[in-house]
Image (cartoon, rainbow, N blue to C red; front, side, top):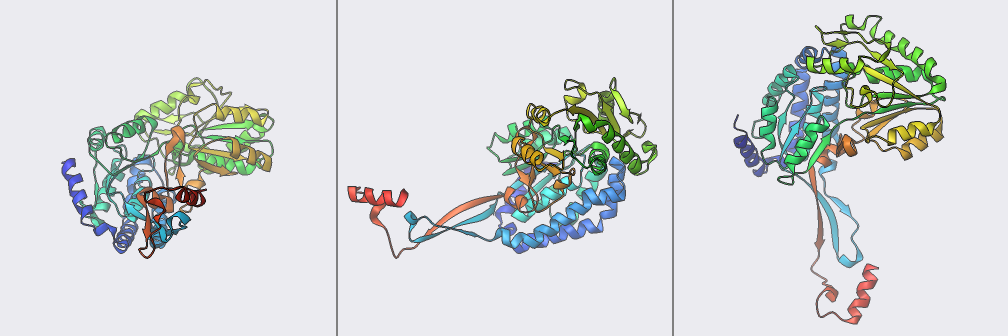
Length: 456
């Protein structure tokens, strides 16, 4: 594919002005949502093939979320796109101040393999709502989903408006050599750095949705039975291949044994005594990642699970006990169904442990203590999170989602998606019936005194 020609074609389409019509955008959001509903079964089949996701999990975490986000943007788009009035300073008398949201132009969305449909469609919804043209680059690691996305997009949009580029590293590199007006990337830190480096050539603004080692902190006051179920859900969903999955557990020493027994019971209730025989248990995306995650288990004290099936690329829900801060499993994001367990006596130890590492994409706290909740929310920096639950903050169009520091920059979902893909122009409209002479030379002491009254 001639990528330079494709970008040029999209720029010409954008310059025609057709995407700036709010009604046009609404029509396309509706059309995309309708096409997702028509192809829902095909998408689920592809997710089953690439990740062994069940229909239920596919709808809950992929197609259902995309449909919901599109519906939310449809409902609120007219309000988002309307010019916003702002108070006008006295120094600008007589005039009015307002801001206008405008699309950036031609955008690039690069999506990952772990939620290959949702993490492609949700940013696309924001790009369309804001009035941009867009090139989508799905992950080559999820080829079945990538093919369905291409088919779906081509059924709704002309390529000059929205296009899909399939392929691997070669296509990624070629795309990053093109000039875009905005780049939205979801993936790992290593590639995120490369995206930022390439974007700097043209000073292209970028959103980076990355990851990191997201902690789960449980103190002695927590409802342990509920915490066990909710942590098991968040950790083992999609076989742990979730950017906001709880990466490791920090638990107060006094309740560790009681909690781990409840956690093992909860995991077995969800996935069965033999999870590798559960037809709804997802697989690791490929052999490379299977080997990497399996390697993190080797030599560790396995409290639960630990077994894997190389033929199906599945690894059982696993708990590692006796983990130390310098263990290999604590040196990288796990991105698999493996939970390392560390303990603390006083809350300050857990606080210091998290603060001594890179800022995570998420943080989860289980406690009944309002003081613990207040203290950790105040002292720890992270992208977002939950009190007494895991990962559900991601599934809301009413709040932005994004990282901080090494876990990313920028945010999206709902209004934030519209704002991310829009430039906000600030405008002052002055009226002609009065023209204050204070700003014009000659400058006098009287004008200076008057100026200080305006600007004090």
